[in-house]
Length: 119
Image (cartoon, rainbow, N blue to C red; front, top):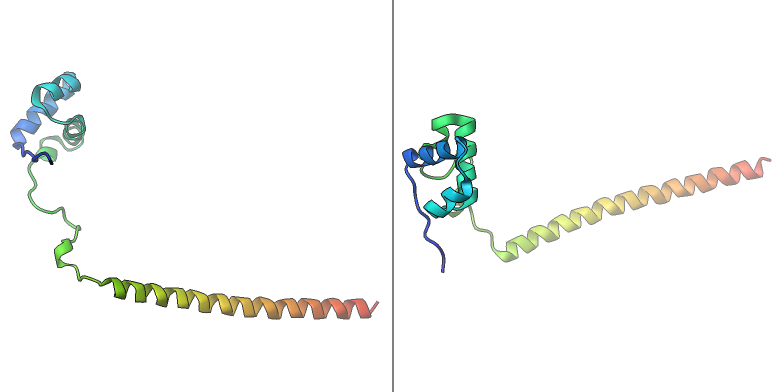
């Protein structure tokens, strides 16, 4: 069972935020209005930070948040294929690094032998 979300007018939210800002107990207001403390604190903070404008109703999705329904769907097999490609690329980079270090080690050993034979 999920609780139905309630919508409160800007005037109501402003009045509640002012009550909290004037020092009234958040716990008392919570019990009286049956609104979560986190919501009350969010309203108070928005009121303190932006004033009345911080509590104006804003309908719809916030700017910059994409709508999941409009995003292209990727199948599980496509995701697996992308993962395989990424792992193969990583493996290729590691193989190149391994070859580099093998050659460097050979050169170090060779230069060490030259120094030992010269003494």
